[in-house]
Image 1: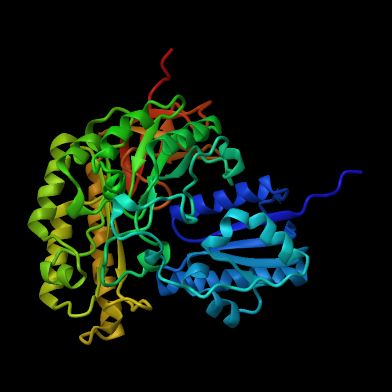
Image 2: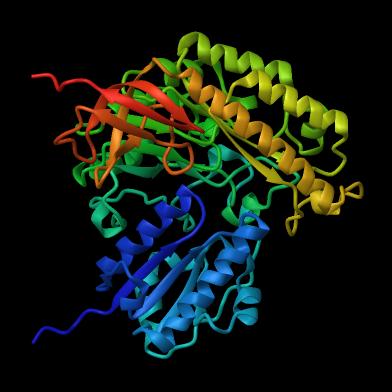
Length: 471
C-alpha cells in the first residue's frame, strides 16, 4: 500500500510578489514529497505567507496564524508555520511572541523548505533567525551583485524545470512573474528594503523561461512584479533592458497580454513609456507610485517630483496611448504635511484623471527614518485627511470610468459562473476593478480575450457589450 503523502496548505497574505513566493514554496514542497491541498482544515501542516508592510497587514498576519493554529484542535493540522515578510522582518521576536506558531522561517530557509517542514512535523524545534538588514548581504555596487549568491524569494537561477520550484495555486488565466526583488531606494516611510534586501534583477533568459512555463500551465496574462520595475537591468549593465524584454515576453506562444507593475515616476524613462504604450501584446497600463504631489512632502519622503513633472509624465503616456490605464497610491497625513500640502495633492489628483488610487493614512513603521520625525499629525487628523482624500478619489475614479463609456476594450475573461466577468487592459488584477460582459457571451470561457464596447460604469467597474463572435 502506497504511503499517504503529508499534505500542506499555503495561505497567502499581502501583495502579488507574495503570491509568487507562495507558489515557489508550494513547488519546492511538492517536489519534496508533500501533497498540496487548498483547504487548511484538510492539511497536515499550514504555511502562512505573512505580510509585514504596514500595521494592519501585520495584524492580519497574526490573526491568520492564530486561526490556523486553532485547526490543530479542530482539524487535522499538526503544525502551523509562518513564512514571508513579517516572518523575515521579525524572526525570533515573532516566534517568542506567538508560541501558537510551531515555527517561524526566514527567506534563507526557502531552498530546503521541504526538509525544514518534515523536521517540524517530526517534532523537531526550529530556531528562528535573528533579523539582519538584508541590504548588507550583497555589494553596494549593483553590477557586482549576484542573485545566486543568497536566497532571494521568487528568483530561481538556471532552472531547467520550473515545476520543481513553482506550483500554481489556482487556475486563474493570469499569473504574477517576478522581474526582480529588493529595492535600493531609501524612502523614509518604508522598511521593505531592510528585509527584502538590495535590488536584484533576474536574467532575461530566466524570466523568459518561466514565462514559457506559465504559458504551458494555461496562463494568458503575465503580470510583471518587483519592488521597482523601472530599475530592472541596472545591475545587469543595461537600464533599458525592460524595453527590449517586453516584446520577447509578448511573443511567447500562448501569452495574450503582458502587464508591468510598480513603476517609480522619477525613473520612468521616455523609452519605457513608449515600450509600454505601443508594444503589441503589452497592456498600456501604468502603475505609477506617486505617493504624494507636494514637493515639500515628497522631499521629506526622500522622493522626487512635483505636480508639474507628474502631469507631464501622464501627458507623455496619454499622447502615445490615449486610453491607457493609470493607477497609483498616495500617503496622507505624512509628518509635517500642511493643509496647503493636502490641497496640492487633491488638486493634482483632480487633474491627473487616474483610473484607481489607493489612499493610505500615514502610520509609523519600525526602523524607518520617518518614525523618528518630530512633527507628526494627530492620529484623528490623519484619519480625517485620509477619509477626505478617499471620498475625493472615489468621485474622481468613478468619473474616469464613466469617461470610458463608448470605448472599445479587450477583456480577459476570469469568471463565467453566473455573470461573465474579466478585466480590460487598463485594469490590473484584483485591485483595479473589473468589467462585466453582456451581449453575445454564450460559450465564453476563462482565459478568452474578448473585444467589447463599454456601455455603462459603476464606480471603477465597467459593463461592456460583446458583439457576435467572428467566424
